[in-house]
Length: 87
Image 1 (cartoon, one colour):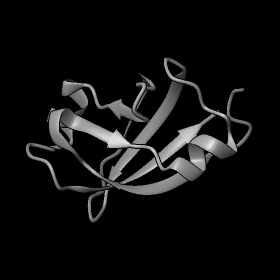
Image 2 (image 1 turned 90 degrees about the vertical axis):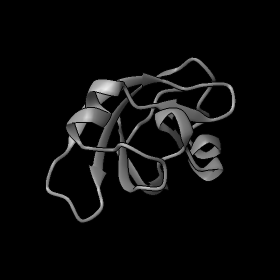
Image 3 (image 1 turned 180 degrees about the vertical axis):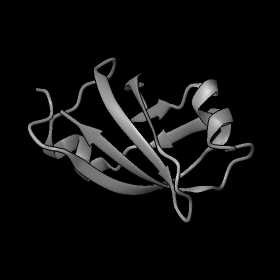
Image 4 (image 1 turned 135 degrees about the horizontal axis):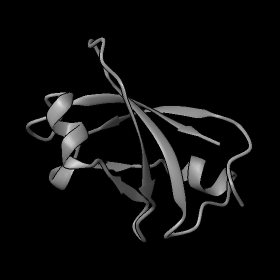
């Protein structure tokens, strides 16, 4: 079932440029592993933002492409990000 509305949440950047999607969001919208999602990422306290398409992994995470991480200067785990999943 695809997203019917934009949903935002805060997430910490994890190892290998991954972001965990909250269980509440996955259950509410019945997101399935390997589903493609349109993602927008804003570093908290920063002005830049990037949008990309990501595939949902089996453990509920998505991976930020290295080009996006490089542009936003996300060089180590722990950064706080505002994440938007869009329909």
